[in-house]
Amino acid sequence: MAKPRIVILGAGLGGAIAAFEIKDAVRDKAEVSVVSQGDTFHFVPSNPWVAVHWRKRQAIEVNLPPVFKKRGIVFSGAGAKKVVPAENRVELNDGAVVDYDYLVIATGPDLAFDEIAGLGPHGGFTQSICHVDHAEMTAAAFDRFVENPGPIVVGAVQGASCFGPAYEFAMILDTELKRRKIRDRVPMTFVTPEPYIGHLGLDGVGDTKGLLESEMRERHIKWITNAKVTSVEAGVMHVEEVAEDGSTKATHDLPFAFSMMLPAFRGIEAVRGIEGLTNPRGFIVVDKHQRNPTFPNVFALGVCVAIAPTGKTPLAVGVPKTGFMIESMVTAIAKNLGALVDGKRASNEATWNAICLADFGDGGVAFVAQPQIPPRNVNWSSSGGWVHLAKVGFEKYFLGKIKRGESEPFYEKLALDVMGIKKIKA
Image 1 (tube, rainbow, N blue to C red):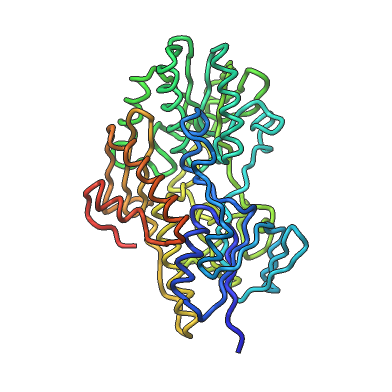
Image 2: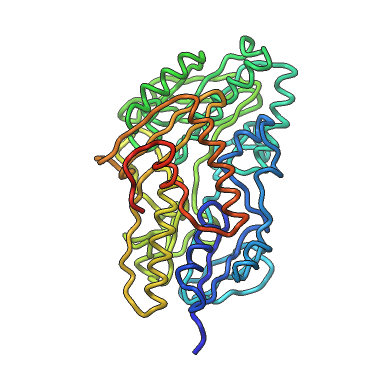
């Protein structure tokens, strides 16, 4: 009898470790293959550093084909054109078709720059750090900026669901501008749809509100919360500040010489609009076992998963899918696939806890939320120079893990060895 075929879409932070952990779980009882958009793994958390020349992209990349070959995992870098779950197949961009018995979707998001006129690096007027290609473009724009400094606008637009990198980049810019002795020539404004600084799509964690507000005051960064970006033109961002009822409270025309704004996310085109598989934004609907209810042989993890907001906010504020949360999804899926291949029931659930390191170059903020959605058993945050060192260690450890084809969970190690908090079960 033919072995079950397990196909993983995506080879980023979630997809790559999912491939390794699933392979370990099913051993030689199933065929495991990966479909990725390109042959290269990029360590996305380092993109803010690339954007100010603290890293070169080559330092945060791993060539994937030899890694997967060593692990006995079939690999294609052609990318998915269309998922057809009713027929258990994936159509690739090169015309090939991949059939599966089980599908794991770990693609990450599509970046919805087109939803706001003038937003984004492709034909727009703002930069991005969501992809290493964008980070390199941002670095080039920053080089031009420092030759003729002026106002900076940085933050995230309505519908965004990953706010940590926006805070990181604002603080990293402040640190780099001080090093260049030109910070005094650069007014900076942070723009976010969050109802308050430090909300993070999680209704805050510990004292993230106080910690991040204090950092911004110390660094002379002004902010606008409940901010809806309506459009962007060359050198000016148009923002509506809304009240609790969603009505317009004030309007702002913010001049800028340099701007980085995180866009809203949506599901990738290959899955959008498939009834029963995705929600209206194209995110994959899953149950507590990470399975899609309509197509139970389809699993999903990471940013592509549909998660309801933590509470009502005047503007759309998405829930982040942080590293430990993704790792717990990976572990649950790997165990469930191992059980299914053995003819057993899929019963494992992800914990959805959150651990985050936000690096500011000369310090940082860390938080732990257990579980991610309140009320919580652990609600902890801290700040200090150790966060920067921990983020550097995180980068080195994770890249080494990918190069070796290993799936050891990192975030539990971080919680135990660095933060010294109670063990979080995955």
